[in-house]
Length: 258
Image (cartoon, rainbow, N blue to C red; front, top):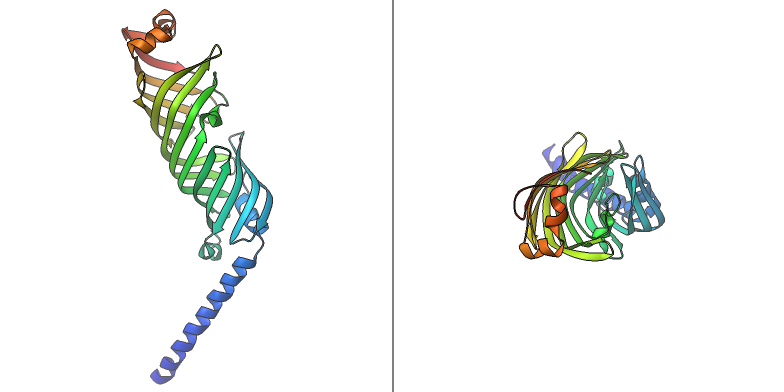
């Protein structure tokens, strides 16, 4: 009996290897449109101009809708993990590029319509967040997202870090430089994204908490201190006390709802 078993094991290894190679070949030959279907099924991700294979494909234009706002991701390229397809939880390393915008990370799709993103990095112009802001903004955004989950149109999980370098705002036709800032943010699990915001350099010292409600609206709490030169440049002492409480010169308490 043991002799027969010892003869069977080497043959079993070859059978398993043959099955793995066959499945691997099948995955590399499946059209990319199948991969696009898996990534867009049951959610608000859209793709056009899809070509390649399920294993390695490309979409000439990709977009995603989050809580009613449409975001363009540009060209999307992906390379699928073949083993993840066998578990019906496909995961792919993806890269999307659009002008000065680049997003890279791992994206996994679930049969319940959930899209999960991990270990993602984002570089984009500040104009990406222009929607809903009262004044034009400029500069460069850089974010790392440790986890993000979308189910249909709804945000389920979010955690990461964000920096805004060479920040500028435009008021009355003129651009004003604000320096650079960073934040650590997460979804509170209910109705808002909460970010702890602080300055890296520049004329404004900032320490605050920003709460972005998913249904709209921004709440800002904290404090900031302006450098004397910057305060004079924007004539802060003439108008800022009308909107912010000032416990001492150049220092302001933040309590805003936008």
